[in-house]
Length: 166
Length: 248
Image (cartoon, chains in turn cyan, purple):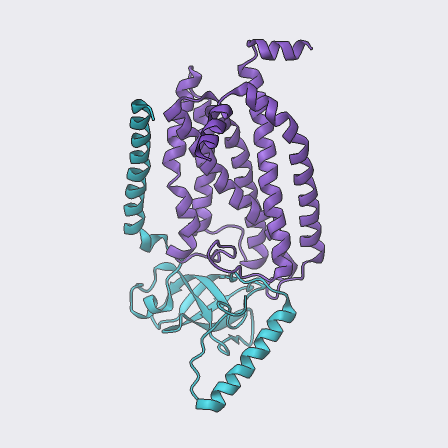
């Protein structure tokens, strides 16, 4: 290669790597702010002061959804597998909201430790399959669980969506 | 092999050669792009089963994902063409970078709009400032920046060089888009299609998506070739081979 061109090639590589390193460091130092939501563990550890508006995200705990007797109010707990945070929300929930589903709620923690949400968004995972396949998987999953429980009555299963099937 | 590649590379630098060889490719590219688009869309919209969670609204994936992937590949190609121009001063590379910018920006806009349309029924919002959506918006602005600089200066050569440098600097955004869903908590779900793992999608849903991906890439190639030919004719309009062709 022509020495002049070699020089330009090196200059360009240097430019790309230097910019990459600079942006990488900036991203690393800002990573707490780039996260869209805080996990229940972060909230339980007291990393979030009460009254500050944040987003909280996690999986809706099975069987935790309680609707108010009057109005649109609903209370549920979200978990990340370690900690749980109770969330209260008044309004219309997205269609994909259901138990076991990932959600992201915007709101503030009140003094009693309940997260008062003003907006609830539903996450969906990267798995796509027809409902029949999901039913079959669920059945196989339950059968397998029953078998395991019969075998040693210890249930350590925590697979929601991810890793199921394909 | 290396010699052959080198030869091809040098030939590609010749506008006349490029113009003549692509003449024959155009109808084939158009046929392949059209047929795969029809097959992919019919399979995806009519024959693929509905999703267990999202029902029919997941079908927008057949536009959204190919457009988003292509917006990023196009950016990489534009940056590489820019680098070739900076290093070898090859005019053809500058023209290719120039014609890719608006095409890539269009695909990026399609990805953002279809993403918003998909987000409303599934997430419950059109837009959220999470890392994936924001970095994709940055990609659109980078395209706009490159397009603006390409037209900015008196001398064509200077604006192409400046635009190429911006394109190269912006390359840093591409891995950020790709890994945003892994590095940070986002509302957007992780990738379904990866090179290293089996896709987390039922085969009946996956095939139309792969066909649409091929279709989008071929369509992109066709658009780039057509627009590059226009650039060639414009820049070489005073050359004898163009004049001769126009007269006949």
